[in-house]
Amino acid sequence: MVSQKFRRPLMSIANAQTMADRAAGAAAMERLADRLTALAPAPLDLSTNNIVRQSPAVAAGLSASAAIARRAHERARRSQRPVLVNLIESFVSACAFVPYAAVAFVLRLMMARVFFVDGQTRIDGIRLPVNVAELTNYYLTGWNFAVTVPTAVRPETFSAFATQYPLVPVPPAIAAYLVSYAEFILPIMLVIGLGTRFAALGLLVITAMILAFVAPDPLATAQIYWAAILLVLVSQGPGPASFDHLIRRLVRR
Image 1 (cartoon, rainbow, N blue to C red):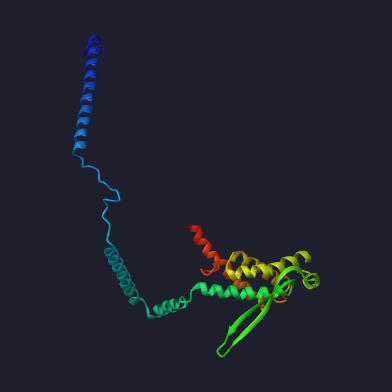
Image 2 (spheres, rainbow, N blue to C red):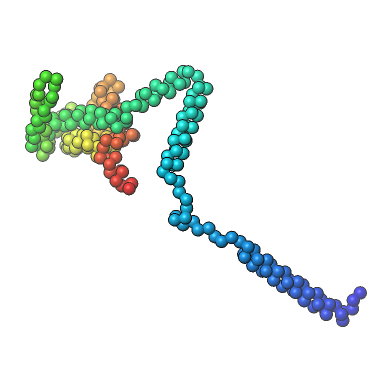
């Protein structure tokens, strides 16, 4: 065994050799990194001026080819399905030909007319005559009517809410004011398509009150159909032919 006298110098020599080896290895790695850096290619210039863009003709050709491929794939997929399935899908596509904008506009006009005409019987105010020329197949006639701008609620309306609708859980005077002015404002909002969901929801609440506290048999009255139409407007909205759609497009820009 090595005596205690020589053990410490030998350990110092071994540690020095280890440190020298580590230093040599680090220097070798640095030289290798420098060589690899020198051999690396220059970075690519990815500025927009140096990127080759497709010409409009090439882009149009690729788009047309993709459309043709999609149609061919769809025809192949249809040929593998039963005839009944293809007939059903064709029928569904034909039914979807009518745009929702037209359907929603008709529904809005229907509900607006129902509530607006009813609201005109509940209010007093300024009467504005409206003259609409109606062109028929043979001659031009006039369609004249008047619109009452509400300034007050008729006394008959207060008495009707007090006597005929006693089960409504709202004080008769408040209910008379709310319903009378709502049936004037909300139908106008429906027609122009402004705040359509809010207007339809308000009229739906009135319809629900009629079904719950006024109609003797809710399922046998016209109000159940009003509720169905108003639910469509609340859930699906007014469609593109409305101020709501225009405002939404302006906000998203």
